[in-house]
Picture 1 (cartoon, rainbow, N blue to C red):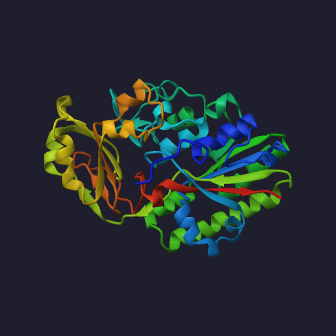
Picture 2: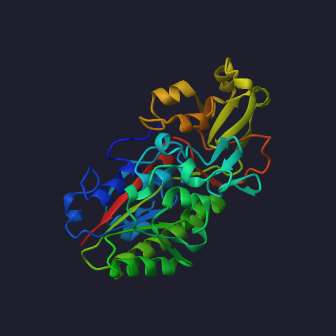
Picture 3: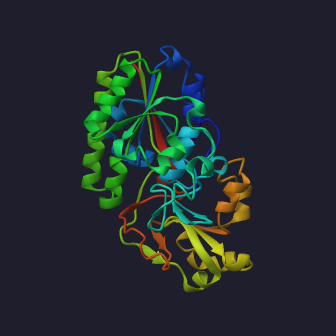
Length: 359
């Protein structure tokens, strides 16, 4: 089990250093000499997966690189919010992919409960109160269709939204913002994660990785020499295929609901009766780590500070996949059938790259 670092070698340490212009373990003082930085977040680009394919990606392989940790759980909504706010999940409160709320199970990426949009019932600015980018207003270059989503309001609000409609125009928008004088540009690309979910880590994934290598090379080529390009990610990926295990019937009877996702599943005790729930959960200990909420808080999985609001969103027992499997709650039959998954605390999912390109 790899627990997240809450020091300088973590995804949450990147944006504060850039915005404040202060060097840390990842970003040396020389980066701020020009005062211009582009941070590109590649969804799903794990350190281990990148290392195994270095020979396929000459541009990415040429960077100054180090492995850093993402957050717990290693999932997009939680990690991207830590990236943009610079704080751990226990402070910003987006503690998973699906979070139990008084209004139902919130899908944080879609900002829906069931089939309903939840932006009015669960205002993003209240749910996630930490100001992204420390209150700065950098250009945010991401998919154009994300502009009006609740999750964008939660983790990118106040940024200058610059939507792209194709990967080519992602580069166009980055370059345009630098040409217009932006000292810091935040950009996001999600193609690799999508391919991993649908196809796993085989040929389609490798072709997408090669495409990203060419994309980053183009960004570097089209920017002035004094701009530093940084590349990181929100999580890695594990290929699970159809290895999905249905939650034990006794656990279903003991719980009122579950939250999280297939590789980091929270059990919520029925009627608040937690006695015996950890022991009963050991039925899945052959493929998961079983951790009660006290252990999770004591070991600071969600950071040194866990607000009362964030604590209320966590469950009573966490089932965290140790093997390449997913866990399915039979009460939620609409769970997606994904080949590649993430969310757990394995090395494959927790380590992401921090790459620095400068000339």
